[in-house]
Structure formats: C-alpha cells, structure tokens
Length: 279
Image (tube, rainbow, N blue to C red; front, side, top):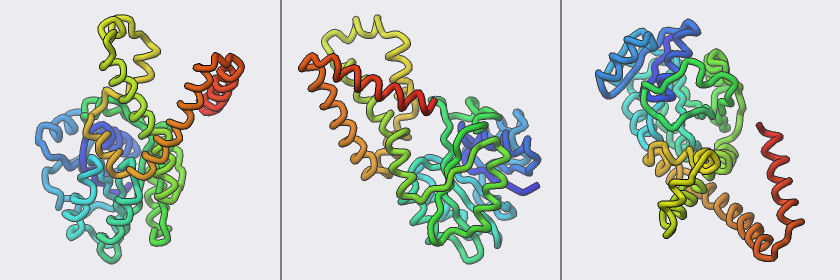
C-alpha cells in the first residue's frame, strides 16, 4: 500500500481515486471545492480529502489531474511540501512543455514523471468518474534523460493496478502521436460542425443528423477550455497534423471532382483497412 494524493477530482482524478482505492492504496483527494470532496467521500473514492495543496506532504506518489494550464502552477505550489523520494506525475495530454518545466521545479530527492492516460469522456466532472475507466486503456509514460528509472518503476506498479497498459515514449514523440489521434479529431470535428452550422441549410441538416454525424462529432461536446489547452500547448505538432490532413482532404477533393470512382475506392479501402487494424 502506498500513500497517494490526487490533485483534481474531475473525471480522470475521480476515476483514478476509485481505482487506486480499490487496489488497496491510501488515497487523499485534493480539490478546490468542499462539495466535490463531499461527493468523493460519499462515493468512497477517497480515504481523506483536503482543500489545501500542502496536505500532499506525506504522500509517496502525487498525481496532478488538473487542466493542462494549471499543472505547472500546481507543481510550483506543492514543490516545497514534497517529502524526499516522492514521485509526481500528471495526466496532461501534451508533454514537451510540461515535462521540461516540471523537471526543473522538482526539489532534490524528488522526481517528476510525465504521464497521460488515453481514456476519457465528454463529461469532465467527478460525477462522470468510473472505477474501470482505465481498464485495458493505454497509459503513456514519458521518459527523458533526466527521468529516474526507480521513479518510473514505482509509478508503473501503481498504474498497472488500474488495469491500464503501459507505453513509454519520449515527450516529443508523445506529442506528435497525440496530435494525430486525439487533438486532430477534435480539430476536424470542430471544423465539420462549424461548416454545417454556417450552412444556409443548417436547420434541415440538424433535423436529419443521425448516428454518423453524432459519432463523428461526439468529441465536440467536451469542455472547450480543454481544447484550447491542447491546441496551445501542442501547437507545433497540431499544425503539422493539420497540414497532413489538408493534403489528404485535397487529394480526396481532387478524386471526387474528377469522378474517379477507382480512386475513391482505393482511398476508402485504405482508410478502412488501417482503422479496422486498430479497433
């Protein structure tokens, strides 16, 4: 059993609390609102709760489960209270900027290991938390030349207890990978919805929209501020993937314009083959 602190009890933090408490760890939840702590206590997601960041002082492992823009400010505040040997990780969906700054903030004898669970839903509050949210999902750990192997081992042991699968990437590779399979789907869905919303036929389109439109644009229903954080902190990788998408879309546009049925079939089959290999 380890003493684990979770800062931020939204969807990810709340789900992590449920899972780690079930695994037998002592879980302290840190939130900004007493109402959230009460809900977590009532749901038996945490052993203890606090509104004060300094109450992570006796924790072996600390997970920062806040929005991306708050991760570094939170680390700055908790740094003086970390005990020797403490391991800190985050769940942010971009890593290069966060890891570079976080490693410089850690007091001697404490360790930061960047992390990112590939799991989520549109709802971001504690009420949406699930005990098995991470089961069979990929949890990325980002390593650099400064990353402590011992800290990674400790973190890995705890994360595997959630049922997640581990994948180790360097921060730059992580950000490009996530730009393609997480940040770009949001960019594309936003563009599609806004294209429909700006159409003169939008009312009829809205009446006729069914599962295809719903499933393709599901991600748009999430918190807009999370999207802003993604695009801002992973700007370079996102722009590179937008360029790749525009090139792919332009190719399809040309094929459709030329009524190239064989070309359409090739593009559709290629996309189907790759997607089916993933899911």
